Length: 116
Image (tube, rainbow, N blue to C red; front, side, top):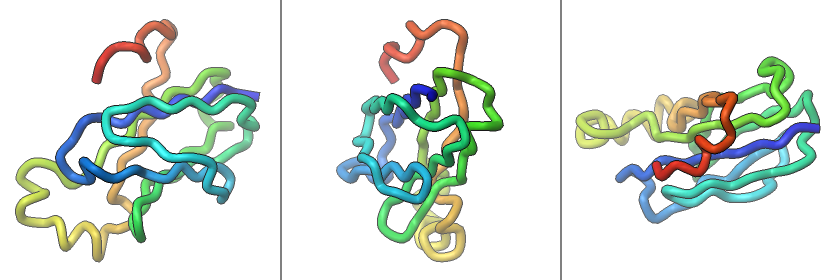
């Protein structure tokens, strides 16, 4: 079993809204803006994805990471200049790539407590 930590950066898009955490196709929790959530006893073969309304993140498979403590960073893909001009395009045509979920697992667990 693995420990999963999801960090969400402080960004303007979706500032007041939570992302739903989906593990193995089940909603198991939420992550708010500029916050950290942790899940214990996650199976090594689990898949992790985030969701907001009809928009999703990429799917991360834990069995490919080969780590006991996995740290994932969640950011919207539509920020800055893209948010102003392409927001409707992202939520319509790139809705399955709206949130970027990437592995930032490090050897020093103290790094997850640093402010975002």
